[in-house]
Length: 274
Image 1 (cartoon, rainbow, N blue to C red):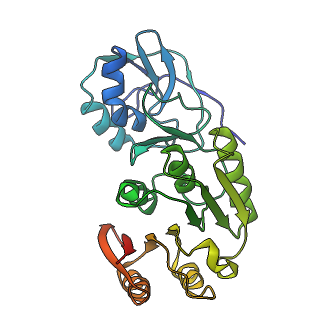
Image 2: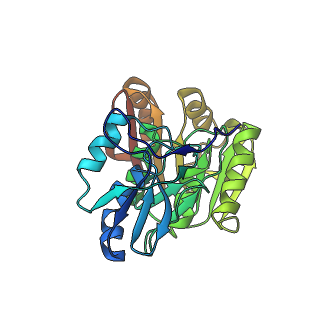
């Protein structure tokens, strides 16, 4: 159940619960990667209304974001709606809930509905995967273990190609389908329920495969009959030892690792055909 809307006030960090940022369209667009983290909820004629804590953000983080903002702002009276998760910009895509304000002109966005699929909020693996999307070639893609569908939706929104999203959890499948519809991407994103180990070789061979999934799911993907070879792989959801194990198995199939990133205890890697 949603919490009741809260009225503007000031947190212990000195950040009001609702503020209005002023600026022209160009200034707002340039600052939007920071503004997205401050939870935009409504456009106004000369700027944007933000509800910094409506998405459950940490007070210290929001104080730092606000101090980095090079635009005038002031407290704004009125209620702040509860939001199911934080908004963010990553990999050139703005991801938001239906309750957040839309993106400024020119910034691709995806709309994620609330649900129980993995990947809605700012988990390090999701963020790294979005940042690594430009390292992958265009083409038909498979989002293996899609969770909320974030990677599949971003792939389609950026015009990289059609994508099939697969997850075993029916709640994740329902959420990904609803998010594809909310984003206007249901024509380019096909969401299916199924186990990764039950995929056919044709679902993987010659495709871009994105797998932000734990080790057992990664091993299921490697075990698909026929030893299919994707044109490129984006792997995450793994800690260093597990990432080494999984990448080594794909290297034996003729791929090569071209990039690896880490955040905390998590890693993400990009592999392409040699």
